[in-house]
Image (cartoon, rainbow, N blue to C red; front, side, top):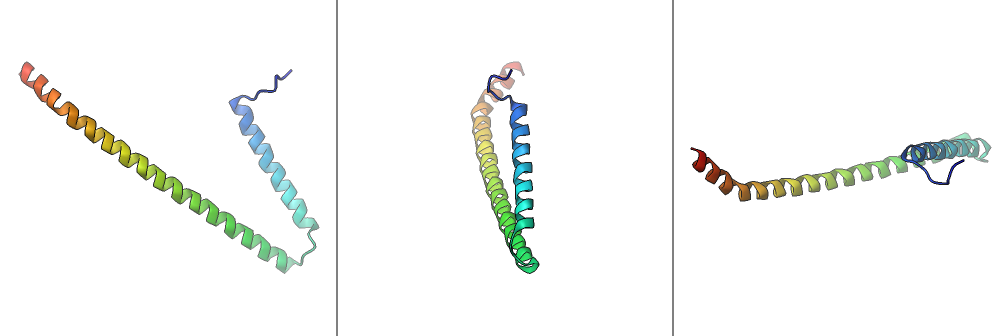
Length: 96
């Protein structure tokens, strides 16, 4: 018997079932809609375009954030290199 807690793999299954349910509900809604084919196609196209814009915005934001992380990491690495460089020179002089 389950204790009510989900493991990591259960969350993936739950999300998959959620999307399947949303898709089935949307499909049934479209079949039972009281619109003409032309109106329905227009609404579908509008929804598709909105979703595409949202995904594009999310991708752009993710790309910007990744660029910021890469820049900060690069700056950090450069700072560490500058701090360690004198130590490296000292060690090389000791063993030369």
